Amino acid sequence: KAFAFIGITEYWDLSICLFHLLFGGQCLPIEFQNTRPGGTTNLKAEQHPLSKHNDSSRYNNTFAGFYDKDDWRLYRKALSWFLNQLRLHSVTFEYCQSHCWHK
Image (cartoon, rainbow, N blue to C red; front, side, top):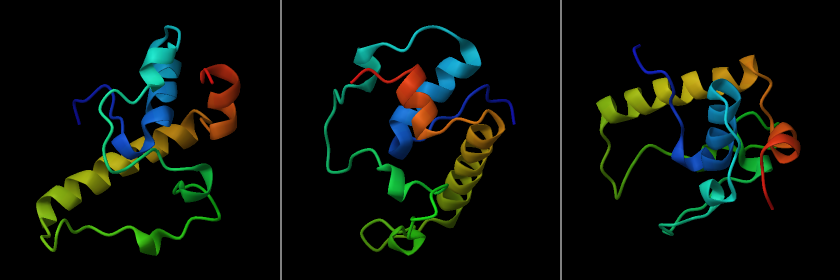
């Protein structure tokens, strides 16, 4: 309850955009570069939880067969806060593309 901001790694670009909307400052191209590439990437618009095209059944809460209910509960709360902030401030992919993203 005492966090000023929560970003979600799977939604890195939207997290950066929301952060700048809330706290100011210009978005910088470096903020959108993947400096530590791994096996996953940012979710596309059709995969976003706010999208009517999202098939949430493909997301699960296991890691190599291990399930941690406390971690998952915390993640769901953080994700819920994040998604509520996107809705509250009308942050969409379209908004970020026109106001923040440097492509």
